Length: 597
Ligand code: SER
Image 1 (cartoon, rainbow, N blue to C red):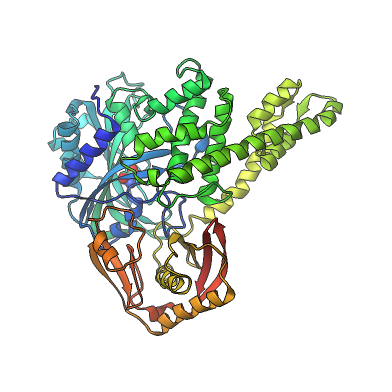
Image 2 (spheres, rainbow, N blue to C red; image 1 turned 135 degrees about the horizontal axis):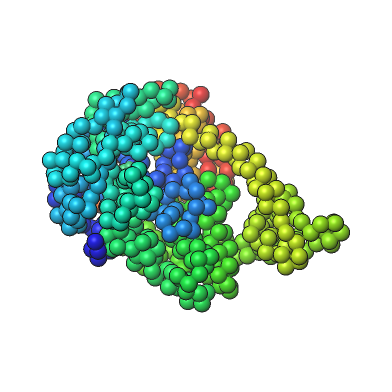
């Protein structure tokens, strides 16, 4: 099976198909989720839509379609093989309380066979086998059968295969049906089935029947309004359609890899170790450009998204050096990513200056780190030479890694040059101990559950709108939102402003917000196009298409802001507003933390 469909063509065909089925195309969201403390990046097309799957009305209607940039960084170290990617694009169509299983499957079938031209014999599907809590999905089974998929290629599988979500600890979830291309290769044994890792079957699409909501006590509640959420990964699907063995062989990676080959004078396909480095470099540079070039792009740092970005850039630099590339190279690769993606993601071009500056800065800094690590190593050498064996302890190797950012592999290389080996097991033990500590920190982040729209976070969200408007009144209209993050305890708001706020300014902002709370303003929303919202003077990022329908929330006559909600009914419910901290976030950006008492 070879259908020469490029990623751009697949993206467009998918959108056109669902628009022809009365779906409205909505913009994809930022890679940096807003008001969701539970995950660092947008991981699926459904992620920004969680409040609507849980019941809120979406301003664009009940049938939606889009393409969404996604990042999954669960296991960065796994990237390097021919299949893993940290960044990918997901195509999705949604029914928000409109059609359900049968129509969703019929659409998937029509798209696969009529638009992509797949033969029904090339498809295998899986459906939910049922368990104590949720019954077997006979509806999905019968539907696939009626569309011509023979029974022996419809597999009933359990929760680990055919249940999706929730994305965090709580939220919408349900049984799914997954579609696989059968490559026609012989099966690897009697147990071989879709989902098997032997490479006979490739998953291309997942239709999730969002019928349940998982609560924080672990219970599942059936939702009265059922939704469909589907996801198709663009890179994987095009690779499979093109008959390629790997996503790295498709046109979205070819020009990046060609430039790496030119810079390094190595050829992709010649040497397995080099191939791994080439893939790592190609993947990480693409993801880094998307994080930096996002509409809410962040710079490398030691926390949150900035830390992931830093790790990606450093890993890319290291593998660039391994390939023998000399001098700075990331800013030579980034423009290729702009060329490939600026049509579907115009924000990349708007932010290209920032992207190039930050990439070059981090690359230079890390090259310094490498030099510093080498100096430290040289300093240690005389002492090491005094020891009776030629082994560098795990603790020493870990110290170089942890304090100077000097990677183990380089310590091993350097050690070998001086006739030493490294106690890798000791390094691993020190590393794991360290990871346990940071993991227990990270797991805190998932406590809130995805889309924890409890009363407290809703109240803080409304307070954020009041704060935003008050800041504009006190500091000026140049104040624009750069980020917002809400937990059940506090709000955090990043905004553009060149200097620290004075204590009078902070006090004045608090007073204004508390006045609006005392006035007990009603909160309401209207649906309009983004253009109308701008004309009405609403605050917004103005990042999507201007003809797109959006919700505009008003707090009485005080504030008007484009936002998905939810909000409290009237400001009197908020309590007393207090700013607990005002500090710098990055150049030209201030950060406020505030609470409701
Ligand atoms: N949410 C599902 C996924 O990520 C389908 O969109 O695969």
